[in-house]
Image 1 (cartoon, rainbow, N blue to C red):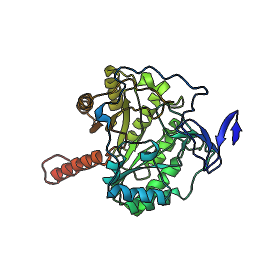
Image 2: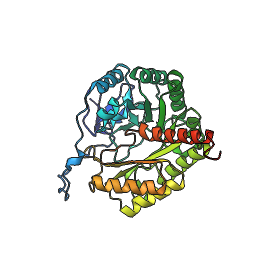
Image 3: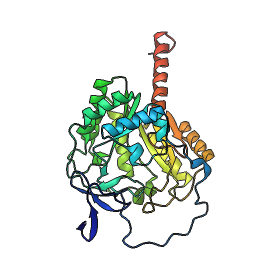
Image 4: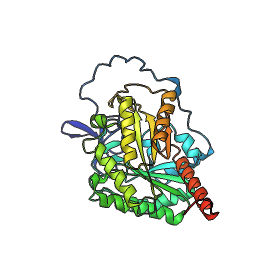
Length: 352
């Protein structure tokens, strides 16, 4: 077993444990689940009041014909899906509904957010040039009505992977023009030219996640991420192509206050963000941030009302909601509204 600065590195093919370094098939090193395990075992923390998971956080087991069909194609075409990499509890429901979230540019992220279970490392510029066409072919085979393309952060690439994103979206639209495409992108280090490259690709929804309230951005997110940077990226995307829906996601249970939740919603609406998702943060491994509170379904319903009152087109809000959960529904609702408006104008009922 090789060593790096005294840390054992597993070779490809060996199964690393959470927090261990390992060598990928492409030859670079990464850390399983994104956060290094403590060098020395830590004593078990005292259980916080109410730390046991409540009953509403139990997700059904993933099963069903649609789920199995998507799983087979994902394996056959060696795709990375955030549904699996981020341990999403809704994988069965979404795959059976004809929606999937495919992760581009590999499964190793250059950043290490303290809430995220995606592996972290430096891919050193590696990309699979066949991935855009491979993804498009897979989307067609899966018969997806709606696909979310997300990715790891790739700060090692000059454009952050923007051209790769755009190529994948164009390839999907070329094969299956009626498949709606959402791009849940990195922040591209705030370089707006890279945001515009993705916006020009023919996507239907542009998303960049703010993740948490401003006060908690650090330590929750990697130091290279930023609350205001995410707002700026979302604002620039909407200003550049107003017809494309913009979207973001907020995790709750990290120590935010209700006043901060409302303030974050107001900041997002000030930048004309259309869609918001709210979900419960769940600690993926003992090396990640603790859960500070479990938000009840009733509270999530109240927060959704706040968002709709502020003017969001839709707010999907619930304990098991993740950023791409049933993402097709908000787009369908928006398109239905546009179709009704067009019909009314054609009938002379509304002014043009």
